[in-house]
Image (cartoon, rainbow, N blue to C red; front, side):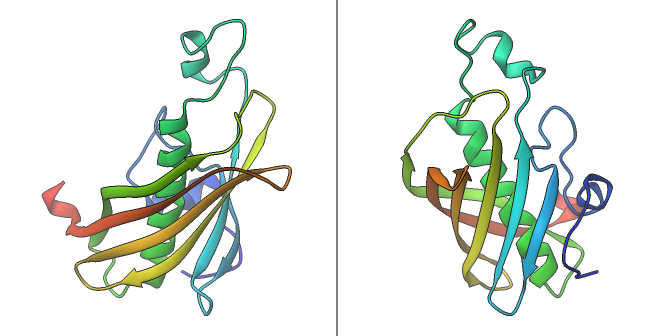
Length: 150
């Protein structure tokens, strides 16, 4: 199933998330030889969280930026993996840094890069950028579990 890009329908075949928690709109670049994917999240004023997160001055919650990064990592792990019966589940997040805020109209580019992947789990280095500027970065740990256990 590996190719250069994935649309939302194809992402939904990989990730179990659905609205409002599916936060990756596209995968725009895949390089499994170098161990990374780049995803895209289009941030619109219609996002449900803007109703209550700083109304009048909408800012995307940082935890949702981290979730989007983790989901991009989930796509990477799926594409690199041998078993389609397993799914990456968030285990921990380290070295989190928020650099800039994200607003409606922004397009977040989500880069997930493999640090370590084993049959039981691993780590990715994740970086979110808007217009080439880093908005968030983190070291994300995950466990690989059977889909039937979720």
